[in-house]
Image 1 (spheres, one colour):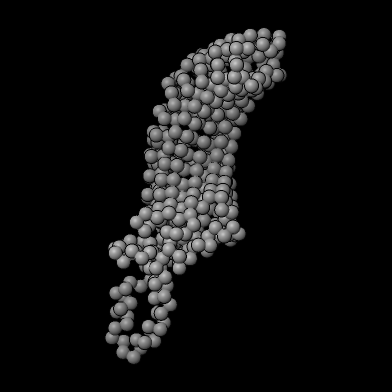
Image 2 (cartoon, rainbow, N blue to C red):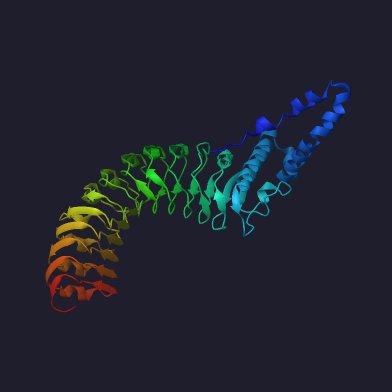
Length: 389
């Protein structure tokens, strides 16, 4: 991947310029003429920093210039800017006035360019924006591989979702130790989830859905104790669901659907009180085994439970009726047997009950008639008798 020379390699220090002009006799004027374009560019860059920059330290000014050069390098690799989203990106315009650019103390801290219709590569120069805290390039048409961003030690939020990025997730991304949000969903990424993801100990949300990721879910996720959302939907992940998936005290949203996961639901997901979990999506995998009798006893706030299109078997536990806040229950296309539990009548907030394509038998429980919020009921392709209450 092509790399640009660092600023210090192409921009002589002020002292070096002075030394090159002193003591040269008659050749000095010609050298001044040769260096005139450089002075012109420096003037524009200083203007772009703003009127108050003369009071700032040279470190801040140099950092601002580096940020500008990095963003101009990024702009050069944009092959389609048909919406003119980057029309303000010129050296004659103050950097912190560029569209999508937000600054603090003269340094670029946020870059918001989501949904601007941009096409091209994400040039590695973005890795030089060392004060960057937020990077949002989602919903564009970026292609190529993810650049190394390991120097962005202040980065807290990165959203590159809904592009056409290819290649693997670079392990160097896990050096961004202050990340709270990581969203690389809806791309064309392949390979395994980096084992080093566990180093992102401050991570709250990880969205890697709708890619071509393979391998196992890394157990190192257990090191990220503050995770609230894990979304790995629609990949090609294999193996079992790690026990670590059940140890996150703040987990609200767990979506592992649309993979090739096998085995059962780990005991840690239902043995301990999952008081924060509200959405559990495990559909369209190769999961199996029976649901234990106490499965519904530890989800006091669960709203959606989707286990459809798997290989689960056995009787449904009556404890499912204890998930009092449940609004969506989809257990279709499995191998469940027996009667539909009467305890489902306790699910007063239930809106969707989808049980088709199983092996249920007996009468439809009259208790289902007590579900006043129920708007969708599908019991087809079973061996049930009687009418709908």
